[in-house]
Picture 1: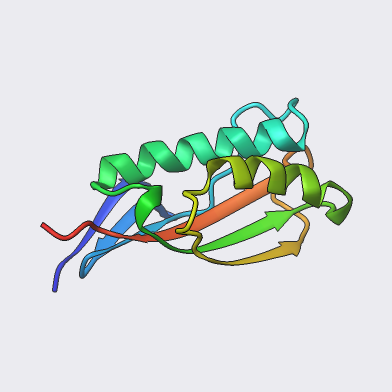
Picture 2 (picture 1 turned 90 degrees about the horizontal axis):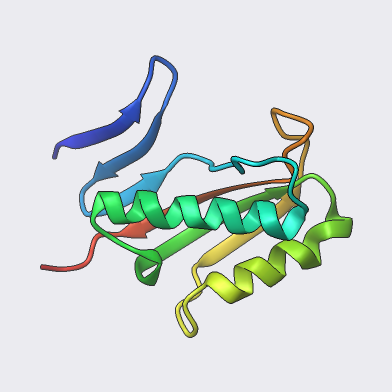
Length: 118
């Protein structure tokens, strides 16, 4: 089986595809001045873009990992998530509080999705 790597540098790839499964790196907001919901919406938009580039979509999500910097803002993140996730097709998900690489980031999300059957 081959593995394909996309948007790669010496450290990591943004997308890896193997055996019908798409793996995305953790995605962070592009505008860290936004509040939690806005940052989460930015991340989810980027996830949509990367999944589309890989040939799939949020309709085919398998799993998600969510890191938030404060559980006090967990509901705001979930508001954006709930508006985005496909009804009846939520992936398995874990969400934890963590310190992120940049202090202005409030959320990071990493997903795995299946490629649609041809």
